[in-house]
Length: 140
Image (cartoon, rainbow, N blue to C red; front, side, top):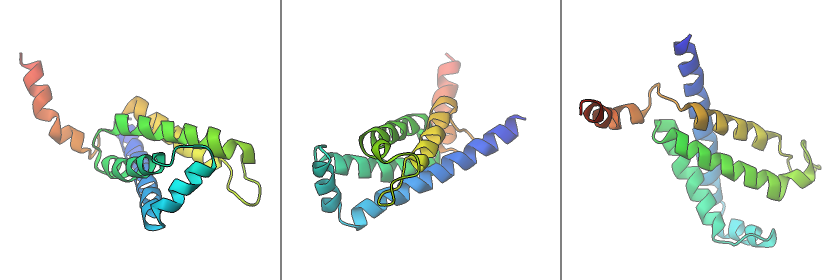
C-alpha cells in the first residue's frame, strides 16, 4: 500500500514540477517585461513577475528532482491562491471566453497542497542529500 502511495505522490510531484517549470520558462521566453507590465495593470508590483517566474522555474526543477518538495509545493500553493483570488476568480470556474477560469489553478493548488502535506520520498534527491544528516542526528 505504501509503495502505491509513494508512486502516486511521485507522479503528482513530477507532473506539478513540469507544469510549473514550463509556465515559468514561457514567462521568460515570451518577454518577462510583458508580464511585468501585466502585473502592473492588475495592480501588483511589476517586480513580482520576476519572483513568480523564478519560483515557477526553480521550483519546478526542484520538484522534478525531489529537492525541498514540501517547501516548494507550499510556495507554489501560495502562488495558485494569489492567481485565483487576484485574477481568475472574477472570470469564473470555466472562464469567460477571453480568459481561462480557475479550474486548472484549483487542480494545481490541490496537487501542491497534497505534496506540501505529505512530502514525496520516492526518487527524491532529498533522500540522498539529507540521508547522512539524518543518520548523524539519530546516532547522537
